[in-house]
Image 1 (cartoon, rainbow, N blue to C red):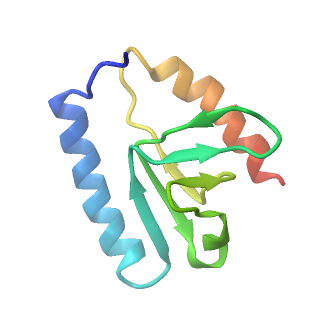
Image 2: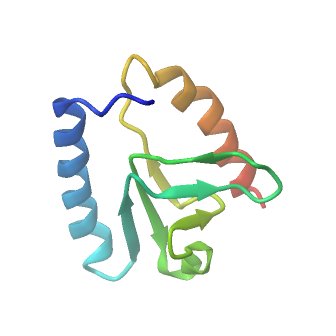
Amino acid sequence: MTPAPSRRHQRASHRLAVALHRLLEEPGYGEVYEAPFGVEFPGTEEGVQPDLLFVSKERLHIVGEDWIRGAPDLVIEILSPTTASRDREIKRKLYRRSRRT
């Protein structure tokens, strides 16, 4: 079982979510989502749950009821010592590969 995020992680995530909501969602540029919200990658069985993500209104067709299929327009991962290498290596490769399609 993955340990719960720390207090510091939760506060950073909340503050970023509020800022993104004001900057991107309120003006109508698209939608902001917070973890847990799954991202699936077509052509692979891999899936991830970024801390925060944004999908532009032009690409909202990739958003399902409880998942996103393909790379979002913006992904924010709040790094911790236990997840940093996965976030920087594995997840980054998945996002890059999916965004090209």
